[in-house]
Image (cartoon, rainbow, N blue to C red):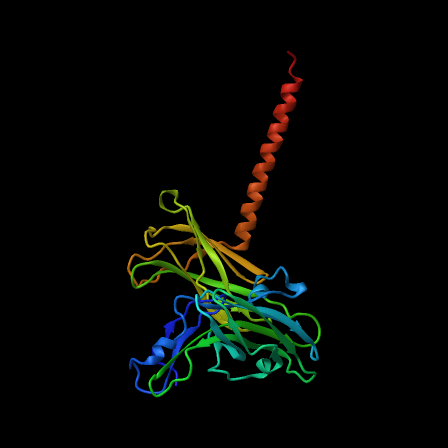
Length: 343
């Protein structure tokens, strides 16, 4: 069974995944299996080596398998499995099911399959990597003519382990990293990706660190992996701060609503601040601007930020353009006047 004490695993390229124990006896018993555990001073990694030609400008397609195909289509992706360990590593490679649940990309236990994972064939099921070595693997995705319309999710795993638990060793450590697959199947072109940002809420964490959360709704037809940044300006004493990255990990299925968060420097004053929040997923990017003030108390929640309306932004742009045009006209008039004055 899976060890209830899940510890963080070193991220290879893209997935925050657990390092877990497979138990065959009482937890916590020292054993000879410890000598066979994976080299914790190094890590395995897996990454994509290519993206589809029609998505070269899509950052997600260089990290995940993201595509739209018609039923009956077959295509390939080249992957690289690598190791930063000083020891040889035996790596198993396999596919398994995945899904999106409550704003998170989730992974099925073990090698549990689904429709998409069954469509993926790997040319190698295992590789032996020399110290600090790498090896290429090819994944072939064959979509049947009868494939269900819509977007499906899976993951290609690379895994090292300490071996099977035995009589003298009751714990086998497993370390795995993977590449997500987002495949939309159906006739016609790629369904649109789109989202909408709602309330931006300033707050403080329980340890007093300023932060913001913002609601996001997926209004498109493809899943979103949300990232971006927050910048602050015109704070007390005209201070500027940032950019601060959006905390990664929010994935929204079509129609889902969730939130993103940004953690800031705990030395920042409460405000008021002007802010610019940029949220993106792949090729889609939106910004909201406005004014906010962080609450004073730890664990507190401030009033929703006052957002700049599109009309206000347009009027502001018109004012700026008008002022610039007036200055240009004044300068032209002064230049003509100087030329007209005889010396």
